[in-house]
Amino acid sequence: MIRNLIRGIITISFGALGFYVNYILDQARILQSLGWTFPVIWTYVAMVLVFAIGGFLISPASIRGFLTLMNWLDARLTKIPTHDLMGGAIGVIIGLIISSLFSNAIESIPVVGSILSILISITL
Image 1 (cartoon, rainbow, N blue to C red):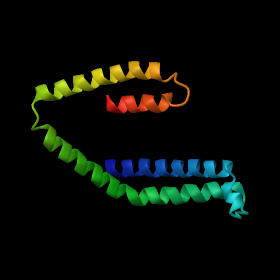
Image 2: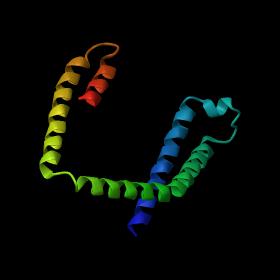
Image 3: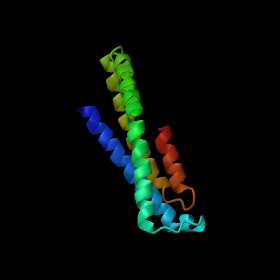
Image 4: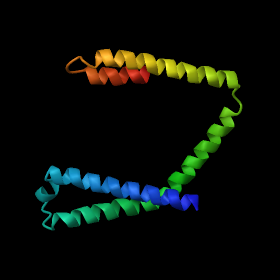
């Protein structure tokens, strides 16, 4: 039952992604430049259906892969002592706080500020 619910959520998400992709293509007038003469509503319907069907077909494999990853992580994390896990979690929290403080200061640099901010957040 839960797998069907997750499959429905993935299908709807892919359909929404198709709607957004078509919105971007419509704003850029790409479909019209390729010779698409149908009304705009049909492009939205077609893209939503194509992406939703793709999401519906991909969802069982992605659910299986996610469950396999969770089982693998569970097997690995149960072998690690609790003190190491807590130390790592506290270290990540402190690193994110420090990177947030740096990124607020660096973000004001005109051209490369946002890129440097992202790089600092990833490295810390």
